Length: 164
Length: 164
DNA sequence: AATGGATGGTTTCGTCTGAAACGGATGCCT
DNA sequence: AGGCATCCGTTTCAGACGAAACCATCCATT
Image (cartoon, rainbow over all chains, first blue to last red; front, side):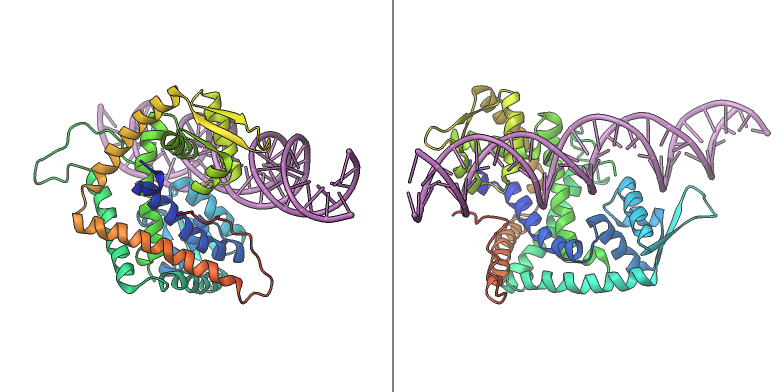
């Protein structure tokens, strides 16, 4: 078996290479870490989110959110307030400055992403999008085998769910 | 723009989720880091490689190789010798113990990968493979030709071309 | 052969990361 | 109300990482 043809390796390498092209933009050029970028992305879209909503919509765990939010707050890009209804929770909101920075960074990232994706034939691009969505579903399916109705429950659970 | 529909985000999240399913096997279960895993993979295939051949065939940089090789040597899974022909170079070879461990880990990883990929309809799987290969080519295409406009030829390609 | 520049591997440094520990806050149960 | 388990966010700690500095070796030129 050659590693170059082992699909999981190909996927990981290509995905990382693509990601690096974008990190080069929002990271090096606009000074955001990956987590900060994602958090700003969510907040620019929603304006304001509490931590429960946030954890539902990100692939970030609570530690990552906490650290990214600290840095974003220090930079004045978001505000973080304790919720009155449940003082364990936080409400995150994007500031004008944060919105301004994000929009600029997002524009640049979009350009870079488009530059790469438009170098693909349209059919390949469609195949990629289709394949990624299907893979996502397959992971969910293979990871949580029960799914209720058809009763074909796979035997022992070999990999405890990713505790996020 | 919702982050959930931003393609670069989708790709990164899904690829990482897939990767985690495999790291859970060769990592948690067999005690290998990602870099150790890749190095063993190459060496099990080739038996023995010098560092030049190795850098052509991996996405690992020299620091990662050095560190992973140190750990693998400590564990007795590979040997590392200085080449007589050029004493700057190293020759890496897999040991019997390394081969044994890798084969076991590889079997387990393959099962886990197949469990997920076989949960996809065959056509989606084909689309995914096609899309990934095309994306790889598109990244190469969109990043290489930038040397022309820039005046300063900034040769240093961070990812040396994958020989093929 | 000696010098200077290039090449390859290792080490160092500051930062980041994940897992676990921690501490505040809430809801449940008696 | 008082315990007690649970839930959240933050902090801690040890290990991992990337970039740059560093050291050894080779090669080209003289």
